[in-house]
Length: 200
Image (cartoon, rainbow, N blue to C red):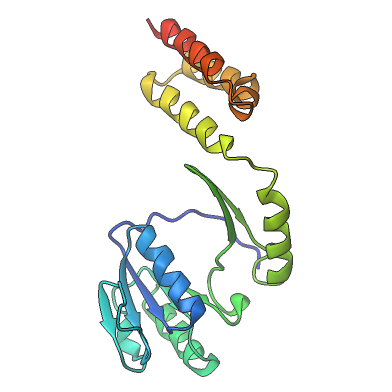
C-alpha cells in the first residue's frame, strides 16, 4: 500500500467500530481517547461498554451512515460487507483481518507526551512493525515529551516570523534535549529564561 501517513483529528467526529473482540475493544478505547463519538456494533458488546452508542446486534449496512472512520473488526464475512458499505458512503475503513483490503491501517505507536511516532508496514508485515516499535521505544526517552512541549510553548509565545523560526531551530539543535535527558532542570530553566529575555 503506497499510503500517505496522517494523524487524523477525531474530536467530535463519528467513528464506527464493528466487532467486540480484543481488536475491536482496543479500537473503541483509542477512538474514545481521541475524543471521537463512538458507535459500537456487535452482538457481544460488553455490558460495561463506554461507547456513546451501543448496538448489541449483528451489523447492518445502515450502521456506516455518518461515520468518518470505520473499523471492521468482526469475522471476515462481516468485514467484507463493512468495507463495501463504508466505501459506498465515502467513509475511510480499516479492516482488522486484512489491512490491505481497507483504506488505512493502524500503525504501532510510541507516545511521549505530545510526541506521537507511528510505525507501519502498510499491513504487509505486522510482526515486523511490532519488533520495530519495541526496538525504537527504548531509544525515545520520556524527555522527548518534555522537549516537544517546551518547543511548542516557545513557538506559541512568539509571533510568527524568521526570528521565531531561527530560535526554534537553535533550541532544537542545541543542548536542550540532552540537558532534559540528564535531568538538568536548573540549566534548562536558565536556558528558557534567556529565551524569554530575547522576546522582551
